[in-house]
Image (cartoon, rainbow, N blue to C red):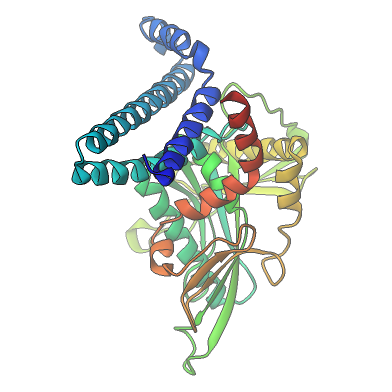
Length: 375
């Protein structure tokens, strides 16, 4: 077996070690049996919220076990094919198996990164806020492009996306928008997107066709699990109701149904503008608790805390990523130096490589050291 192929096999085996470590392989089957027994309990759905969490936790464990076993089996099968092909001087079989191993290495590396999403809230659903920076129509249009980008990314992963609140721009785009994105590890993947995003392009709103730079900020925070208690003192909040904008005509919303909650000690403001005022109060309160929970996570996690503190205003010197459409095509993450010329793909939601690079930057030293120690 060629040295290059041996290195590929070694990399896949390291990924398998990390996958086993992250799911606590020695107890995984026992925990799955416990999950299965609880699922069969006829009283489980008397508490729907707890039942849904249990089902999600069980599915995540099932997926982790199946992922590990399928990678391990595919590795063994292709190594065996290479050995057989070399023994019989069948170059075609050897080449096909080597190509399969190269693809398996990429798959294993991606699953390894997913396994590293083991922070306290990484597995949670998430809220995602987008705010246009200074710059009027240009920044509002850029904020709208970012919203489209993240919605497409989430939909490609099979996540559910709910628009919680939106403030339209004066002429185009949006001033701000808040989404709830639901799916396995939604917060873990998206948390690295918090920060200022910079766009350079020829403006479609400039008759002189000059190049413009626009900024918008993104903030990501986890949806608080029902089993996490966050106390909010009623004396610390102000609840305002206001008329939410409707579609116009007979569909215009004529009641003061939208809700805004202001948390005085922190200055946090959350809004919701669904049809029901009662529903809006529940949504806004949950968003407030999530924001407060995020602050607590920030205090515990120095790296995340530093990232949020450095986010600053949506402008020069604070950006985490640049999207350049003119005079050349490039998206570059300024934290990892990862870059790609596929600007159209990125703006259409192909963000996994950018997110993975940030995750690898945050945990690569730890993960590799642990993998080496376990191997």
